[in-house]
Image (cartoon, rainbow, N blue to C red):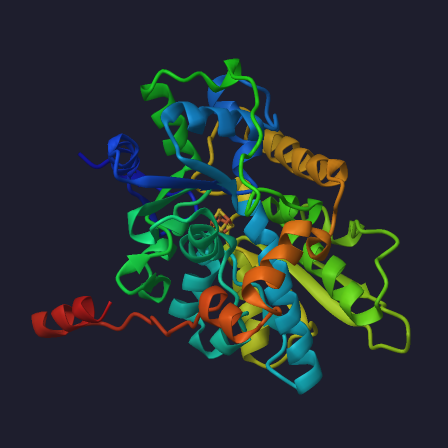
Length: 400
Ligand code: SF4
């Protein structure tokens, strides 16, 4: 049966998809490819009596291998790819007088909120797909080619901090020739339940490394996608390099860190370039405020990061929850993500050698025709209107 849980973010429901994943794992004809989001690794341990913020990335790889996963890779890799595509898109908009401010697009909670409530601002949202969807698209093309796999036999399984990612994966925009880029999404909580059912105690596992040279390495910039402010910080590291030709001396943007629902920063690129004004917003209340000012044409910013969940994905609606330790684990998870960033040998997306490789071998340039085809999308108004007849209701259901 299916278990419906109430999502703390609001209007979204959590479907239990663990049975589907078990079916995939036990089918010898299916090749399973797993990805997990930046925020999952600093929260899953809490479901196995580990301290808040414990980084269990290597244990997740081991656990998935024990479950029988064929390929285990990291959404962090495609977070780096998103920065390349979204950063390039921002620069193009600035240079060509395109729609500004540009909003980030990696949070499907925010995207569907905008589609339902603020259709006027949809042209302001970056067309770059989220890291989850970029991963699916790359797995079934680039990875399939690289490993010599039949994409029809592949099933991409995501482990996400998020209930809205399930709905995102089902969008018709993300199905090509009848094949979805991402086949099924488990929340962090569902993944914890799956491990418990299979008798795997995460806390007792030794860590393993990714075993794949295509999509298994990431920069510190990708790691911080899991916290509010992280996508903006990651983007600025790359945008500044592209605009000035120099790496930033300090890659950490303190004004963008912290807890206020809306935070802002001015980035002085020097070299006679104009100052870039950016903002970070988390929670739907802050999202609404940003959308309202953009709709009125009164936004003071060029680039705005929006995350629907308080705290960003680390506080996502699908993460382990503990009433007693909720606020404390928020801080610990964020510190853990910042620590991963500091420990990475490469801290900028454009310096990830696997990102250079994917453009050299497969995509060409950021925003190339192929990149647009596989890594970008469109949005549509989904404003709810009152229906008066059954015929109108059926017409809407069919149009979905
Ligand atoms: Fe999902 Fe929340 Fe992250 Fe948005 S902020 S992607 S809704 S977990």
